[in-house]
Length: 579
Image (cartoon, rainbow, N blue to C red; front, side, top):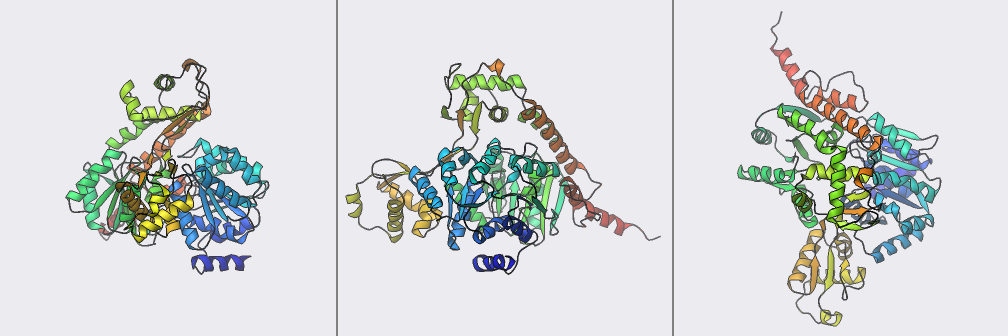
C-alpha cells in the first residue's frame, strides 16, 4: 500500500515523498484505525485525508467549519481531476439533492460538509445509502470544551458513526494541549487500537519576539521597515483594522484591511490582492487566516494580544510556511494585562446579566412565554444593543452561553449567499446583442446549474459558476454586476448576517439554568488560558519557543537561539569581559 499511496501523491500532487508524519497517519487510516493527527499550521494536513480517500474504495466525508476553505479545496481537487463536492448553507435544494444523489451513486470521492449539516435527516439518510470509506474531522479542537474555540455543533459529530458503521475517523488539528487531545478522542468515541501522531510544534525558521512598547504603531512601522516582504498585522476590533491600514498607507506602506463585516466578494478581492503581492500588509481581526495558504509571509505582528496561546500559536504560525526566516512579533505593554483580564467579565458575564439579555431578546422578537419554538430570526446586534443600551461584547458572549445551554442556536456569522433572478424572458435573452464571450459563459453556466431563475430569486454559488464557466470568482462577480447594471439580471451579493433560532419555547428568565460545565468550568479554563497568555507576553527569563512547546506538552532540552530572550542572552554573553 505504501507504494500505491506514493504513486497517488506523485500523480495528483507531483510530490516525490511525504512530509513528517503524513505517511504514518495515512497508513493508520488505511489500516482502519481511528487516528488523531496533531499538525501545526503548514504541516500539510489536507494530504493526510485526500491521499487515503483516493486509495480507498468509497467516499471520504470531511467535516469542517471553514466554508471558504472547503470551497477552495474543492476547486483545487477538481483541477487535479478528483471528484470533490461541498455542501454548505446557501446552496439551493436542487444543488444539495444533486450532490447527495451523486454521493449515493458513487460519483463523489471527497465530500466536504459543515458540522451543522449533520442535523439534517435527509443528509444522514443519504449517507446511510452511500459507500463511505472514512470520516475526517478538521479543526477537531472545536469539539473540546477545554479548547479555545469550542463549538457546540461539533458535539453532534458522533451521530455520523451511527450512520456509516465501523468506519475509521481521522481527527486533525493544528493546536491542542494534551488535555484537549484527550477530549477530542473521547467525544469522537475513538475505539480500541486508535492511533495518535504528533509533529513537533517547533518552527525552526520562525523567530518569536515580544516587544514591550507604549507606541505600538511606531514599533510596527519600525519592524516593517527592517523586515521586507509580506505581512499580517492582527488587531482586536474591526475599526482598528481600518485605522491601522490607513496609517500604513499614509506612511507609504501598501495595506488593506479584513474583518467579518465585509461582503464576501470584497473579502475575496482583498485576500487575492494580498496573496498576489499587490498589497504588502493585511491588517485583520482573527476572522482572517484560516485556510490561507500563502507561504511567503515574513512577519506576523500582533498589536493586540489573543485570548490564548493556542490562538496566538496558530496565527503566528502563518509566517514562514516556505521554510525561510520569518518573525512572529507580539507588541505589548502593562495596559494589556488589564485589557486581557477584562475579557473574563466580557466573555462570561454574570448569570443575571445573561438572563436579562434573554428577556430582552424575547421582547425584541415579541415572543411570549411558552412560545417561539424553532423560530428563526436575523439578528442585528448593533440595533439590539442600541435599543436596550447594552454593549455588544457581553451581549455576544451571553448569546453564546445561552446557545451552549440549549435555549437558542446562535450563528454569529451565518452566511447569506448570493441571489440572482433574470429580469428578462428566456426568449429575450437569446435576442441580446454585443455580449462578451465571458458574459456568454457565465449566462450559460447559470442556466446549466440552476432552474427557476426566470420566475424567482435563486441562491447561487459563485465558486460553482466560476468552475463551470472556466473563470475566476472575481471575474464572475464583476460580470454579474455588469449584467445587473444592464437590467438583464438582478444580482444580490451575499453577506454575513447573524441568525438566532429558538430551540426551546420561551422560559421565564428566572428558570434559566446554566450547568457548571458550560459556565463555571469554562470560565475557570478561560481565565487559565488568559493567564498563560499574559505570562508569555511579560516573562523575560525563558526561551519563547520553550514556553510555547511546554504549553503543548512538548519538552525540549535546548533553547531556540533566535527569540528575543535568546538573542539578549547571546549579546550579554558576548559583552561580558574576559577573565
